Length: 237
Image 1: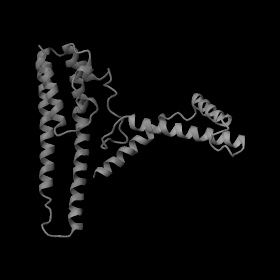
Image 2 (image 1 turned 45 degrees about the horizontal axis):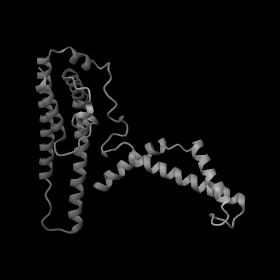
Image 3 (image 1 turned 60 degrees about the horizontal axis):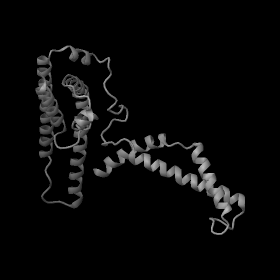
């Protein structure tokens, strides 16, 4: 299962890294030509010193350019956006923020503090209930699949592979349902609560993957987001 998820992550990462790699950069090309020229002038221990000058100049310049381009691509690949493997290929990545024209944002800005606190606590209860129901459904489905007490290794591997596939499908369904039902409302409530509490530096607040990037990582990611929202709401006066 881990290998399948990793392959999916690489499929998301490679196009983004390749898109950001600047192949035709004058500064890089000039540096590679300069290195090649220095290699030609260094007759004693230069690379390909037995080759003709023109061939040596071109080959060293091309080799330097390829090495720099590959290095930049690998750096962008490992330092670029992180993925969980459950993102939808057709869905834009989270974290772009909620549009200011969102009707929910305007409605929340008009609520009195007591009403906003009550609405937030109601949303957090729904989020926790949703996560509890999805977890219980998966546990019940998993309990119905029992490992064979006697059988070949192939049969055991087949059962384990089926359970791994069920886990991936469960995680994907939960992630999609969470994005559709709770992600945008939860971010809107969070931003409004922070605004009213005077929290200007968001970097000082705890990182909540389910709220920041719609990433469901950890044992209870949705409950973690709900607890954070509830904590903000209770501070509201």
